[in-house]
Length: 117
Image (cartoon, rainbow, N blue to C red):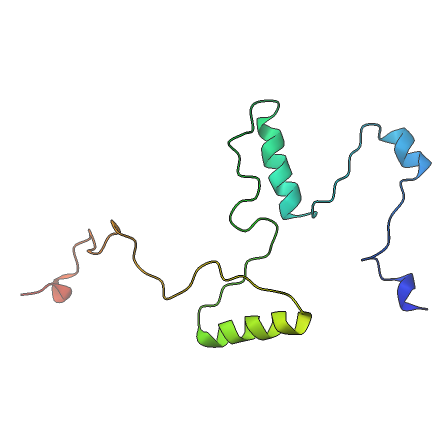
């Protein structure tokens, strides 16, 4: 068996006559089958209304999220993408910070042994 017999990434599927006859009105598009399809379904849920205010790209678009929490994680991500020949974009640099207005003091009263005297 040759590799081409079971690899499907580059094959272009064809719609059979049976499928065409049984499924009129079927659509296809170049979006991926996961996040792209999810985004399309969210827009369809609002249709046929005005969709002008929908951010069709979102922060990440259809690109995967990779989170580097440590310097070692960052090095792994960069090495993997370099090996794949993929250009990466850093969307947020660390370290993380508490947003202004965030809770800095707990609203809960501590146990007796934890309270300051």
